[in-house]
Amino acid sequence: MAQIAQQHWRTYGRFYFSRYDYEEVESHKAFAMVEQLSACLPEPGTKVAGLTVEKADDFIYHDPIDHSVSIRQGVRIFFDNGARLVVRLSGTGTTGALVRLYLEQYEGDPRKHNQDPQQALHPLKQAAFEVLKIKHHLGREQPDIIT
Image (cartoon, rainbow, N blue to C red):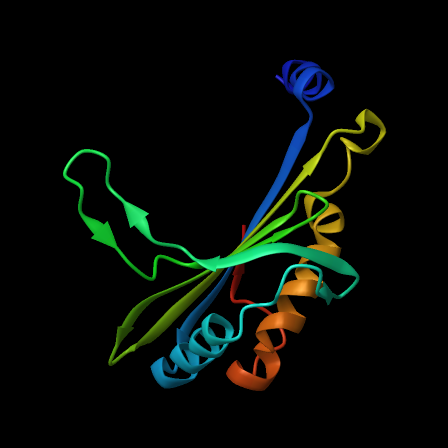
């Protein structure tokens, strides 16, 4: 199986991916963090932890079948090196909220296809922590779950 994956990466490149879950966050704190980011999206050209923002938006899903529209589906930040950060908030009930960070990075260089995903995504993680001010808003150093 590893040989199949490596051949695929040599042909198409590799996407590194990780999800960081912050569970049972006080709802008002999670909402405030995401609201602040959404209200002050970084402008194209802005440097965040050494990465350059290409574009940022608050994702709106338009269903192609029933034409329904779902707003506030996640804040997305795209960087000029092909990396993408998505921040989603859910479960804002009385037992707390769930904040999920999705980190994605394309790597086309075959010499870099065998990196540990967390190592490959470290610059993007630093950018996420900086732009979200997670420690300030949530009072946490690390997520509860990293996948």
